[in-house]
Image (cartoon, rainbow, N blue to C red; front, side, top):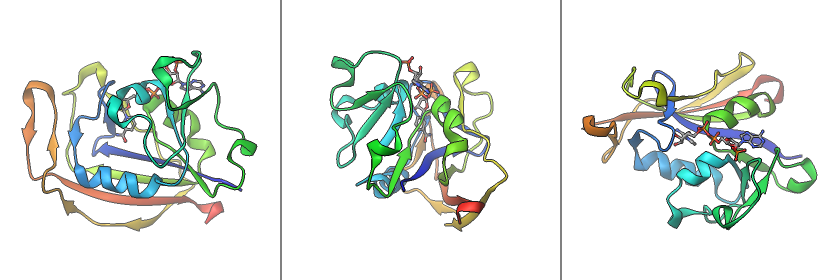
Length: 183
Ligand SMILES: NC(=O)c1ccc[n+]([C@@H]2O[C@H](COP(=O)([O-])OP(=O)(O)OC[C@H]3O[C@@H](n4cnc5c(N)ncnc54)[C@H](OP(=O)(O)O)[C@@H]3O)[C@@H](O)[C@H]2O)c1
């Protein structure tokens, strides 16, 4: 049976994006994402797919599924477009598959996932993104924390908040959760 996981990075106040991008750049988190997901299918919403720079689409070493009600076309080249989560038989003999965003897809699938890999980015974004802020889903109570890296410092990490771009020694922290009944 395929285990379904979700992986995201969020600010301390739960923000994952500005609608078109992530409001930070933390290379260590990108490496973590690559390490967790490589070799497994990834599933994302159309907006997240389109937010990936064209040169990184499809994400290599992973089957890319894009959720959309639109017809596949030039825009989706390299991915498989689905109008719902892949069926169990589409993922047959695959150990894991990873939901990789964005906000809409995390919140509509959180009840179907058993694993969560959450990166906390050590910054509060407050209302800096206004109504463009896209939020992480609430982690249901039946998930338990199974691993915690504690705070690490990003050497080249930065926040990207438009004109208020800040370069900081940014902290980040990897948290792993499992649904208790699946543990
Ligand atoms: N921090 C992180 O880890 C992280 C990760 C990923 C993304 N993000 C950020 O999240 C933001 C994008 O998130 P978002 O909520 O705006 O969009 P999204 O979830 O990426 O995509 C939404 C689109 O996906 C399709 N969709 C969603 N659920 C569907 C379903 N059940 N069946 C069929 N199609 C479905 C729809 O496409 P159609 O309109 O074509 O039907 C919908 O408009 C960006 O800012 C991105 O940078 C952050």
